[in-house]
Amino acid sequence: MSNDRDADAIALALSRLRGRRGGPHGHGGPHDHDGQHGHQHPHGPRGARHGRMGWDAARGGAPAVIRMLDALAAASDPLSVSGLAEAIGVDQPRASRLVQQGVDRGWVRREADPADARRTRIALTDEGSQMIRGVRGERRERLGTALEAFTEPERAELARLLTKLADNWHP
Image (cartoon, rainbow, N blue to C red):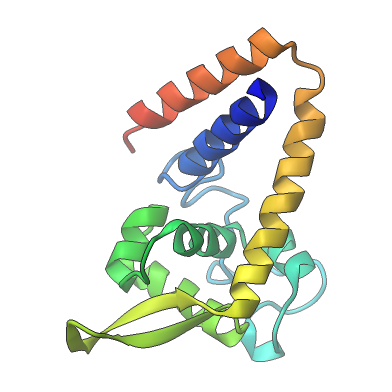
């Protein structure tokens, strides 16, 4: 069905744009809180020191953590911290902080790189996989609702244009 294909293309393009520095809600934007900028979460103190946090807390203030989970779910193998940083458009120190948040929340784990035991790779845990499936489901539902106002040709054109923008976005 064309509607699903267009919605998937739109969601992918938006995700790619979100992961780019300077992109919509990308690195450094006012809504891109990773707990390192002194912003307070509306439901209390932020950070993993306060126990594992569910999707409501992640949705409320950690889009960079969600981008990290998205990138790990999309990767065919676990990623190095530098590979993860590149995938989500942040610098390596920030990626390390995001990984620590994910570890503290039980969503990711560090594992030895089989090719070089001195290096670590980052992988989703079962809990992290479940979390990102929920995030993607909710995102798809919200996007589907928003796209109801578009005709089928408009959805196809939006998908084409957003994909073109994502392909050519250079921070």
